[in-house]
Image 1 (tube, rainbow, N blue to C red):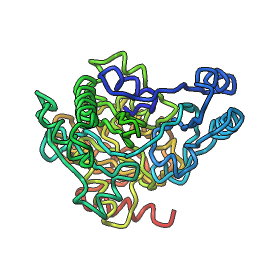
Image 2 (cartoon, rainbow, N blue to C red; image 1 turned 180 degrees about the horizontal axis):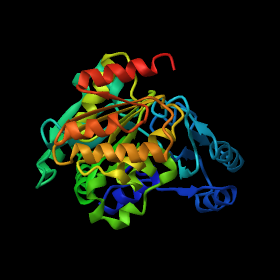
Image 3 (cartoon, rainbow, N blue to C red; image 1 turned 45 degrees about the horizontal axis):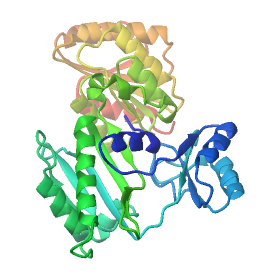
Length: 393
């Protein structure tokens, strides 16, 4: 679950991270109220609050030097469609903005804590060259990226924070307060990562001011969905308007669904099989429309919800059902497919591959259903058939 910048800053401040918070507005009246809370001198910054990066390059972050300039830029950004390299060409609508006082910057740093899936441990990724896309820096100057694994039980240790701090601010004088302040901020980020069961805590830029203050100027936090039951107060921060409507609807139905941009709807049980299905579709020249794992207990209701989700997308020109019956019985899945297909009036080609427990009985039910369902005996055969069925559509 992603958070907005202003929400992330609230959480980080609670763990000892120094931030510039500002005020949030979602309508013209809110803009005036937010402006009234800011210091009168300026300058100020208006920042679009969307769940995507690249806001500055996309025109979603603007500096204002007068009150009237601030008001005009706030009104221009609120309601705009922001298109960045992370939103896709369709962009996202800006429904909230953050108005915050500008800050003098002497140096910018990048720092994040995320899960290293390969090592199974949290990983700190940092660079003394912040303020730019970390992916670009990693590609052009990988030697400038610092990495430090954290103990998943103990978290960041003070010696790790101090070591990173000195490496991130090498030009500071021996009596400078920056390394100590930077180390404490790093410890605060670690506390936030573990306290909130985050999958990502990122600050870019983390700034050092001319007066040697260390401040998180921006903040990005993503929370682990599977741990939200431990944090009901954080689940209330979810902004479904920023999420894909199909993914929201799927989550309400208990489906594991991720929207893609292809034309072949995939209905599969098991995450590994679902990923392999998408890979094989791509190998044969097709384009998957989604990742959809209906789980091991698929039944008629699950199938109906899944079919409605897939057929409600006009991009879907065909459906591949790929079920391996380990826990679930294939004959029950087949009956669920038949009942659901009848209820939603199936109007696109559908290929069904059943394998495992009671697969023969399931295939027999499909063959006698009278529905335009193409059976497939093997995984490869199923993907070939659905790719051919939607070719040119």
